[in-house]
Image (tube, rainbow, N blue to C red; front, side, top):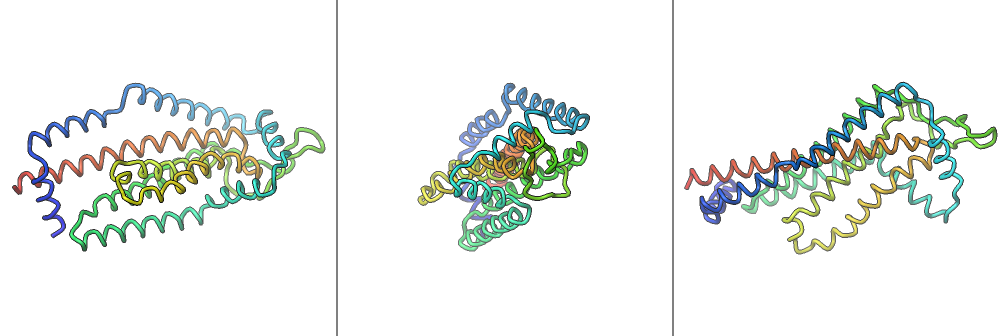
Length: 276
């Protein structure tokens, strides 16, 4: 029933000429600009070059040590560091998996409810798949690069001077480059921000309730790198590589998401036209 209703709605609302014109317009928007392609390729080359260089010279560089010691010697209000460390803990593997499960369950449940009401549930299912797929791709690529580069994590005996050593919050048996927290955070919250600014979401009557979540997502992306350095879990170069890697795979996933959802939409439109 839902599929028939959707098909009738599409067929009634869109004439063949309108569909053709809108499709050509959407196809043009979907084509990546040459500048975007050039930036993506340059980013991949930079990340690859940095990975090879760090693999050959895994020791912390002077800038890494200087940055970590400077950050750890800062003494802002206690609640500032507490909030920054909370941001880091929120992006640990377990909380991230729980958050993904909640998003997945919420979107799927919303989709089922919409289907039972005779409305289209496609956008809910597409969003759920997009979020999970983006995080999975970013995490998988991070694991691959992390394993190949095999850079040791910061240690308490990494010192700039005899009595000026790095404070390490915890020792994790995982390599350091690039920062997994940073990469996953950029991909995860970045994709959520992308979804929140889509036209259909912005037309939602309760859209203003999403603004605090959007602000938190942006802050989380900005603070995650600082938190990893503050806790002595990663070097500055790990964090910068995490931001670059996360941005690259986020851009790729958004492009794939737009392309796949467009093709699904066109397929439904064609079915509606044939059925009419």
